[in-house]
Picture 1: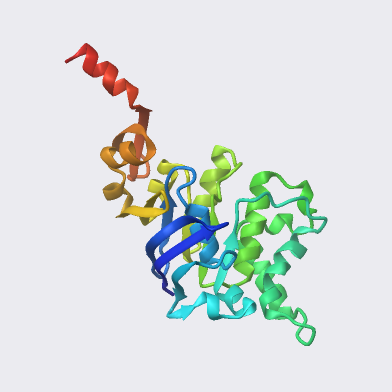
Picture 2: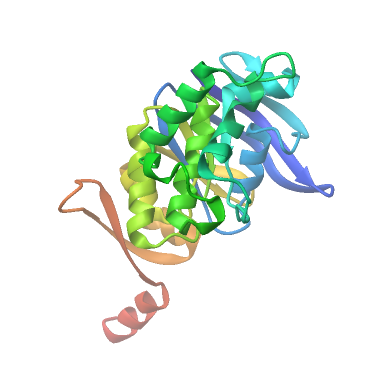
Length: 265
């Protein structure tokens, strides 16, 4: 599977949000979108998972424009986990995950034993099998996130699109969710606001500011002090994490540079 978005421009209420963006995601890659608030990350993702039609450009999976596919056909290729609150669905967990089979079902083709096996496997892959009989609204935030990811996996997509998958999660559940994301082995495009999480879990990053890509590549190449200062407005000292071996950033206010220069001219 290969995702290719080319010359992508998007607007909301005629206000340009994303301009001339090119991104790719290869088989099994985890690719991150990072940038300050309002940089266009979520809007770009909406164009990929078919919620907001681009003003210009194309979004293709293996050469197929997702916007020319039927809704069901697109849902068999792309599954999304969005950052809006999941709500208190009055369904049990297995029913929630079974909704991921909707692109394959119809009046003439109800859920089969094969569909149920796929649901069971999706729950097992995210470590949520013990939750299958629980009511969704009784779950913790981390448990709900796992269940919604299982629902996405039940679609058997070629591409996962995750919009701030660690939003509202505590540190433990942030790490567990992103570790699971990597272990799935599915091509994944995710927006993340935490640069250290992006550096730890993504193979490549695209940095957006004002709706444009200003840098792309492996985290250790992209997240330089100069770029972080320019795009995010903070100082950064990169190092190698002693456990993961990945790039890790220590942040500080840029005003401290001026204070240091004043003391040591």
